[in-house]
Image (cartoon, rainbow, N blue to C red; front, top):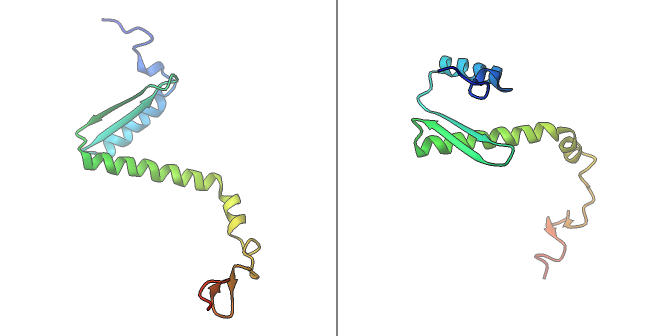
Length: 108
């Protein structure tokens, strides 16, 4: 049976990426594999090979960690500015430096 253009994954825009992933997968020799796909219409599909509940938790955690790291990298200049010494106010009115209490708290 001949493949149509729609059935031939080698013509897909992600074909080169998928080939690289498969090469890496073969080198890693995983016991568990999962994939998540989202269509332009928002439909979500998952498929997996030998994935138990614990594996799913680990995979989900890894994706969340990667997402957080990407966010931090994208916002690193803004974060650096916020965390710089210029941003910290040494004369903060909320804390009494003499006894280390917040204004009006702990005083009789």
